[in-house]
Image (cartoon, rainbow, N blue to C red; front, top):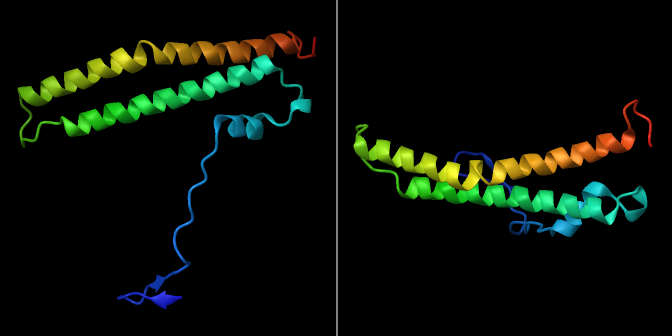
Length: 127
């Protein structure tokens, strides 16, 4: 270990470690466990759809934020340009996120929990 300009420690370890990139199948396998855990192929497919839907929502949020940052009007006062910018960002968020994706995410989550609750029965016993 060496020290920097102000005497603070500087760690040298030969370079950064590369990030681990996992596929959706690896995430599903790690989260749901092995095949003998009782997970049906339909449930596994539903979980994959849920993860892809979350990835799509996150991607659209990042794109909307990038668009917002790149198109923000650069002036010191709040004027009509900033009001129009805010309205356009709000409309784009409503068009691409609120209208199609969040209801779909709610339907997938409702289906997952509804199936789980229906399989355990009303009194909590497996049917």
